[in-house]
Structure formats: structure tokens, C-alpha cells
Length: 268
Length: 365
Ligand SMILES: Nc1ncnc2c1ncn2[C@@H]1O[C@H](COP(=O)(O)OP(=O)(O)OP(=O)(O)O)[C@@H](O)[C@H]1O
Ligand SMILES: [Mg+2]
Image 1 (cartoon, rainbow over the protein chains, first blue to last red):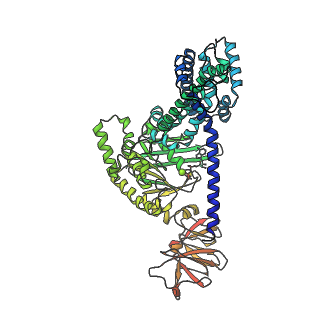
Image 2 (image 1 turned 180 degrees about the vertical axis):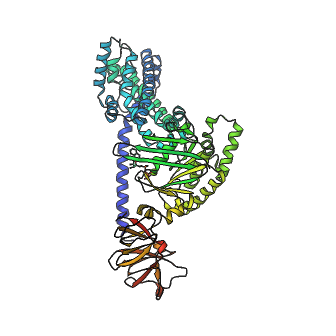
Image 3 (image 1 turned 135 degrees about the vertical axis):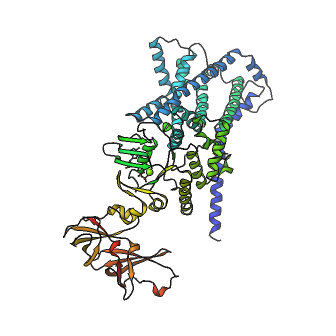
């Protein structure tokens, strides 16, 4: 008994220390977001403490801002198309990596990862050069191509990792039971990598949605939301920006919940 | 009986140096229960997987019935496999798992339902039809995997170490159940195992494999009583080996000098006088002789170890020249310490002439 007490105390001490650390960490991560949300409802233009009063004016202003609406629309357009494109290329690429063995496979796997490890600036400039060489006019579609390229690695790694964890015998069992390779993919492989595909898709969407460097080089006259915010910010942070930020936080929250619900493996 | 599977000079070379299966020919009769037995890496799984269509042989022909199926993919073969890890689909219920193999047959719904029900009833798990594989125990999953394979009524059922994931008690029970199932449905079974007891208990015929080749095949009792090589003698049952020299090898009976003693044996091979041989003795055929008791062949030595294993004792004995042999004694009565053989005590061992194996050459497996 006598020996147990000190260890109990020290463990309690360690626990408190750890909890304090976690509390600081959470504060560090979340206080800025709470500040942003608070100021978006503050009825003063200047961003100074204490808050002066409650207002929905900034949100009303957003509702009237047609430039902002266009930017949001563009962002959704770009993020959706880039996500679909990167999934259409990335999932089959992961399947090929998983199934086929060929000389130089590990080099190929790293090459696919290259665009995401390269700084966006490099991807942006090089794709800009390419489009210029090919005589492609810059537009939202070139941004889509840029994002899809940069995000390919995300999809391939996530889906490939899941495929690697899938027992080989599962697909073999399907063949054994009379399923052709295509039926096997649809009936057995796809349901078992579904959550990885959904997860990779949502991540791609979010990453594309707030991407700046690649967009900066590849967009034509149209602006995406982050670009729009960035350009208005040159006049300083305004409460409208805070309101936009709050809406994005809300949307992200919804996306995360969707991801968790959709990606949950069916246990029952 | 007609042959259902014919393997003709089948080889699988993964690379010039990695040889999975080496020139194997094997015929399996319709309705037979054949077991491929051998240590890890001897190529049993590779052979089974080539019959199932999961690996392509680098040479040879595989016939199913009278059809050449060597290059057919698995989904075109009337053969089904029970996988070692069962490979049940986690996203489907038990019923959906079993019904999956009937999908390609384009049967009407009622037929599918009855066949699934019949298969699940056969393995005694119809009440689990709406559960998921994750909710079942290992033994239950094993049975579902069986039901899923036999529901298609294949010509041949392949089983890759089907019982290896089960604990000892359940494994024994399933061995008998599988054997009964085989008798009941009359489908040909080809099973892979590295467990010799399993092979002996369950099969009509055992094929012992060694380094990608067939070492010997035959009925369990034939392999046990007439092993062709020391390798087989040691893999089917236990055998202790002693080096010997032929003193006289006249028709059917040979006298052999072993460990300073002369013994006689009925070798199954021709032996020249003076030839070097290896004598094999099964511990269960070596008897501890009591005072005054005699045997056809007698060996003397000192007890070096006594191991108690419930059913009986295994006694290690060092002979005069230092070589060692084992003798098993059963314990029909409860042990009394006074009668227990003591380490260090001198003993006489007896072996009947027809229980001695003689192999050519000097081999230590
Ligand atoms: N896909 C593969 N690529 C290369 N070599 C392989 C492959 N599969 C098996 N081998 C080799 O072929 C040989 C036979 O393997 P196999 O799996 O048939 O053995 P096994 O008798 O089933 O052994 P175990 O009891 O361990 O399952 C082994 O030497 C193994 O290393
Ligand atoms: Mg194996």
C-alpha cells in the first residue's frame, strides 16, 4: 500500500500535465476560429476588443455581394470537377498499382506522389508553361486540371493503402464463386474500399476549395473564393471576411460530419 | 471410378531459382478425399491453387473431367475453394455470402433461397443467415465458408488448411465433421495440410510432398507401414534412425549390424552384403522388455530421458555406441512412482522383425 501512493500521485500529476497540454493545444487551434466567429457578429468595423454589440449586417452585406457569389460558385465548380477528375484517374491508378507488378513500379508510385510533395508554386508555374506552350487559354478548367494533378497523390495513396490491407483471398473468393474480374470489382473490391474513396474525395474537395498557389498561376479572369478573399484582404480584414470565414467553418463542419457518417465501416 | 482431376507433369517456377511445384503428375478419382501433406514451403498450396485456377502452371496440363482447364480462369472452373482465412465477404450477410456463388447460375429467387437454406442447414448454421461474418466464431466462419463453396455443387472442393485457424479441440471435431460431410455429399475433396494426424484421420489417400515433388502417395495405413523414404517415415508418424551395415541380405530377410548388435529385418528393397543402410524404428513399436522377457530383436542401453505425455511415456535410450532411440509405453493404469522407469537405469528394448524399416544409404532426415 505504502508503495502504491507515490506512484498514484505521480500518475495523477502526469495526467494533469497531459490534460493541461491538450487544453493549450486545443486553445491554440480553436481560439482564432472563435475570435473570427465572434467578430463576424460584432457591430463595429474595427476589429478591437471588447465586442461592442450584436449584428447580422455583415451577413446581409454578403448576401448582396455579387462578386463574392460568383467566387463561391467558381470554387464549388472547380472543387467538384477537380475531385471527380482526380477520383476517375486516381482510383484506377491505385488498382493498377495494386494488381499489376511491372519493372519500375516503385518509381512510378513515387512519381504519382510528386505533384503533392512539390510546392504548389512549382506545379503552378510548370503547368502554366505547359498550357502556354499548347496554346491553351487560361480559365477555370485549367485550374481544374491543375488541382486534379496536384491532388492525384492524395487519392492514389489513400486508396492504394486500403487495397493493400484488403486480403487477397477476398477477390479470389469472388472469382472462385463465378464472378468475372469486373463483377468482382463491383461486388467485392469497391464496397470494401468505399470509405477510403469517400474520404479521399472529401479531402480533395476541401484541399481544392482553399487552394491558392496553383490557382494563382492557372486561373484566367475568374476568381475562386480564396483568391477573392485574398484580393479584398489587401484593404485589411473586414467583418465581411469574418462572416465568409464563419460560413466556411460551418460548411467544413458539415463536410466532416458527412465524411464520418459515410466513411464509417459497417460493423453490424 | 473415373478420374475427375488429372495433373500431367505440372510445374510452377516462380523464377529460375524459386520452384513452387516441380513436375508433378497426379490423378484424383471421382468422390475421393485426397490430402496433400508436407512441411511449410513444399508447394502444396501452389499445387492446389493451380487446380483452382489462381496460379498458372509454367508447364503441364490440368484436366477436370475430360476437359483441359489448364489456362481457364477460376470463374470458369467447376471447382470451389475453402480459403485458409475463409475469405467471407465482410459487407454481406451470411445468407448473401452463400448466395453469391449462385448469382452466375441465373436461378430464380426461390431456388436460390432453398439452396442457400439447404447448404446452411447442412453445416448446421441456418439460424445465422441474417448475421454478418464478423459476428461469428472461427469455427462457425469455417462452416459458412464450406457452405458457400458446396452450394455451387462443384465437381471438386479444394480446401487449403481449412482447420489450421481453429483450436485443438474444435479441430478434432471438425476433422470428423468434414469427413462425414464428404461421405454425405459425395463431392471430391482435395485438402492441403501440414498436420499428419489430420491427413491420416480424414483422407482416402495421402500425397506426401517434398520440395515441390511427390515423395510418396497411398492409403494412410500403407504410408504408415511402408514409407518409401526416411523423409516419409519421419513425416508420417515419428521414427528414430540408426546407421547400419548389411551382414547378410538373402531373399527377403536381411541381417544388419546396428549399434554393435545384429538384428534381422524384412527390407522392401534388394540389399547387397556390406551395403550401408539406415534402420528406422517407430517409438510405438519399440518395447521396453521386462526381466526374462525376450523379443525377435533386442537392443541394450541406458535410459537418458523419460517424458510423460498423459497417454503414456516416451523413453529415450542411449545404446552402447552412443546412438539414441525412443520407445513409447502406454500407461493403462494410473502411475505409481515405484514402477516408473528411472533415468540412468539399464534397459533392454525389443522390436519385432516386421516392424523394422530399412532404407538405402546413410541418411539423416
Ligand atoms: N507468389 C509467389 N512468388 C514467389 N514465390 C512463391 C510464391 N508463392 C509461393 N512461392 C514459393 O513457392 C514455394 C512453395 O510455396 P507454397 O505456398 O506452395 O508452400 P506450402 O507448401 O503451401 O507451404 P505452407 O505450409 O507454408 O503454406 C515456397 O518456396 C514459396 O516461397
Ligand atoms: Mg500453404
